[in-house]
Length: 219
Ligand SMILES: C/C=C/C(=O)SCCNC(=O)CCNC(=O)[C@H](O)C(C)(C)COP(=O)(O)OP(=O)(O)OC[C@H]1O[C@@H](n2cnc3c(N)ncnc32)[C@H](O)[C@@H]1OP(=O)(O)O
Image (cartoon, rainbow, N blue to C red; front, side):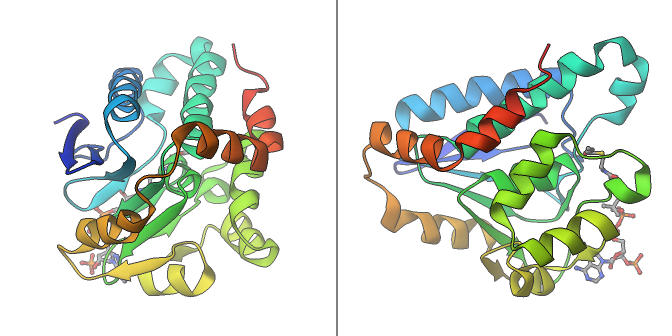
C-alpha cells in the first residue's frame, strides 16, 4: 500500500503506508498530490502509518541505484520537509512506530508529534550510517529541539523509545497501541478553524531561515 488520504470530519489523515514507508520518488509524488488535496479540503492535517513503521526515511536502495540523481532526490525530500514545516493548516504526526532518519525529520517538521509509548524508536541514525545531515536537515532538527537534545539526538544515533522521546521533547505526547491516531486527532481538534493564509505566513516567517537552508542545493 502506498500513501492514502482519508478524512475525520474536517481533519485530513494522511497514511504514509503499511511498509517501511521509505521516500521513493513515486511515494514522494503520491504524498505531494495528497497534500494538495488535504490543503484544498481540510482544516487540519494528521500524518500516520499502518503497522510498526512511521517511516524508515530515505530510500537508500533507490539512491544507490541512481547516484547521479542524488542532488535532485535530496532536493525533493527537502521540499517535502519545507512544505510540512510551513503547511497552512495545523499539523500533527501520529508516530505509530519506528521513525528513522528522514522519517524522523518528517515528523519533526510537523507542529506536534504523538508517539506510541511502548514500541518503536525515534532515531537519527546518520552518525552510525555515515550520512551527514545536509545544512537544511540540521537546521530543521535544531529548530525544533533544545540544543542539548539536538546534540544527543544528532551525534549519538540514540534510539528513543516513546516515553524517553516525550521526556526529551522529541514528541509532545505518547499513547498506547492502537490509540496514537485518536490522540493526534484529539490534539489537533481544538486548533481547527485557524485562517490558513495567516497560519501559513506565520509558519513561513517563524522558520524562514530553515526554509532557506532546505532550499539550498536543490537541483
Ligand atoms: C540523511 C539521511 C537520512 C535517512 O533517512 S538514511 C536512512 C535511515 N533509516 C535507517 O537507517 C533505517 C533503520 N531501521 C532499522 O534499522 C530497522 O528497520 C528498525 C530497527 C527500525 C526495525 O527493525 P526490526 O528488526 O523490524 O525491529 P522491531 O522488531 O520493530 O524491534 C526490534 C527490537 O526492538 C524492540 N523495541 C522496539 N521498540 C522498542 C522500544 N520503544 N523500547 C524497547 N524495545 C523496543 C522490539 O521489541 C524488538 O525486540 P525483540 O527483537 O527482542 O523482539
